[in-house]
Length: 420
Image (cartoon, rainbow, N blue to C red; front, side, top):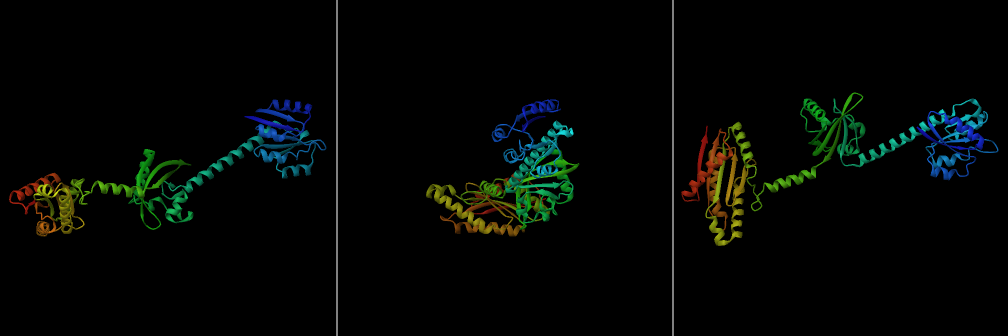
């Protein structure tokens, strides 16, 4: 450790004696000595002084005069006053004015050791202030960020520490939040076993990024993107969560998915992901023992409409037919899809073969009454009962029936019932 010591109030010979005394110190002490304090302000501005040693001599050097300058310009600098003999009132006054130590010269004090102790103490206090200031700054940043920052006990999931974003999100005070846990505001856990599996996953990976929904003060489920890590303090494990509200991102994502799955002309769903939907519906059909219908519709002579009236009219016919389908096939689980061109797909679940067939026949009957120029439609359908087949197989069977309807004169529906 190196220490810069400024000495004020000693004659030249006394300074030499002091330098010899300090030369044998355990730590390197560099001495800057002046007989008076006339240049103190400039010295403190130019030199990083760790400690000032003031030799008080009545009538020659008043050690109290430089104190205010030192305390204003170098608040982290130590101050020591030396006096010739014991002067209790003076010493008391010195400490009241804020000096760090007051030494009586003839008591055999180990001056280097005292100076080093004071310098160390000052450095510790400065470091502590710096750390506290940095922590306050970090806390201010955390409290002003919209992200949720939370520390939870890994065993109980109780909140240990958090920023004000969580107060705002839950609309609760610090005391109220500390009686709650992440487990109870998150929708990702169904049991405590799920929580402990999650903790083990974070522990093994060291760092986990995931999405989860949290319930806010109004009971709404809000989507968050979280980053979670684990730390150990005093043999206890804690989880650190950093989460951003992604509600607006989810809205945009859903809109993009909707656009990707939607036919821009008819506003019907397109065939993207239809195979997965069919697989889900046919499993539901088997479980509930209800009939599932897959039907294909193809507008008759549609090319002639485009050639004779133009594509604008053809587009209007497609929109009119889409309206026919939506007016007839409108139950929540029913799917109406534009497969491409003038071809449409309908999937219906729940209902008897007769009731579903009635809906399909209504499509055939209503189409020429709802399109201009008058247009007919042909359809091919299959009814599935307790049979598990792929979408490709079902589509091929329905397509064969559509081909038969076209071959037999159009403007009609050909159906087939398939069961185990």
